[in-house]
Image 1 (spheres, rainbow, N blue to C red):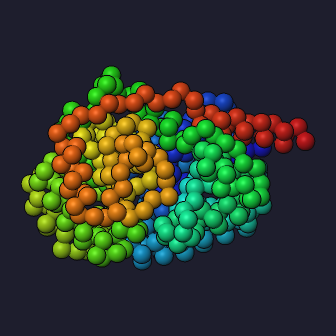
Image 2 (cartoon, helix red, strand yellow):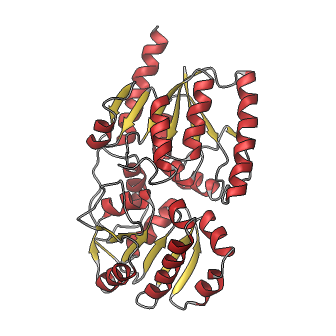
Image 3 (cartoon, rainbow, N blue to C red):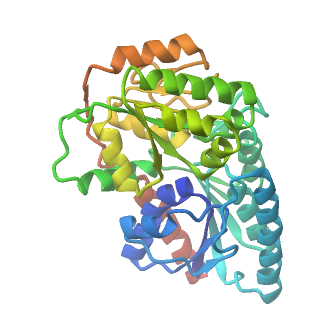
Length: 366
């Protein structure tokens, strides 16, 4: 009896790594498969979290960071999966873990079902009131829920959204990102009580809704450059964002902005140190919103709407993609520090592995 774990993106790896570490600690056998949707910094993340290398990379040395490369990756993924299904390599697993709401989540769940493996969905139950917003994440969440046998729901709202779903709903008391963040903070040489000592802000933009809409993308680039004249900014570039910028007139303009530093992605502990040293965060990322809410970091969501409630009305604000709101947020937080909140001890990853361990034991007994 073993577990198949399918991971495709950096965010998925960060949120799944604490579960892998806990299964390693308890001696639970699992097969780790990377889809190859993203590959940049995966080796760095393995070192940072102390996880082992993947047993298999379906599409090695690949980065699906454009529409054409995504289509090519999709074809290669299914070509390799069909080979695995014919050889029955995965059929010994009793449960397949997928995470989140990416193409790798959907394809991993589909592949598991084709192999006759039960699906366990980590971070299940997140919902938007609109089926097509955010696109394609909301559609993926709903489709994956229909294929899932065990829904690992991070909070009561997510569990309530799954009230009519088939399968078992397991409340994990939080997101596994809590465990990843806690681990990263323990690696710092003394966590300060106040954040913002670095006198800079952090920017991260990568959502399809912002990269694919020309008017919104232009607005965000203009706003980032304008904000960098108020407070120095470190713009962490995801592969898709870097590729989008490179195809536009913004590359030279961003590089010419004296208060703006374009940065490559880094390992997770280093990114957390970057956040702790920052005065503010501007992002469109759901994981960044969760991290910032747990830390207490003043954060502006670069979106018109969000389906996530983490930190809203507290340290998290919604920009509605309004230029004035973006500028006002930067002015408001550029000169101040913020109190770093303690991370709760309860481990969502531990609760997930508790359930997996009991399930495997019951299956072995039968």
